[in-house]
Length: 75
Image (tube, rainbow, N blue to C red):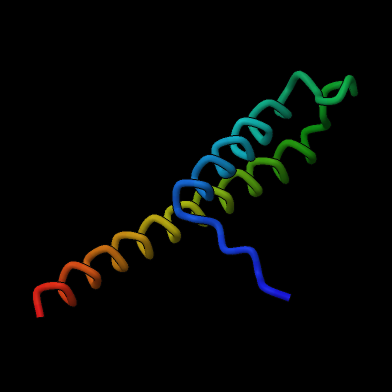
């Protein structure tokens, strides 16, 4: 079975949706549930930070791949 390999653009679009969802959960609650406890909020902030670091990592990899492709075309 072949693995799904999203493009950078597809990844960034999906990441934007995940980011909006994580941020919408904060104090208003989500899916009709009541607002979260303080401990839940700190866990949520950890998820947001991890998500942002994943996006940074993917952006760096994408830039490195573009630079590598440019240098290989010159040779």
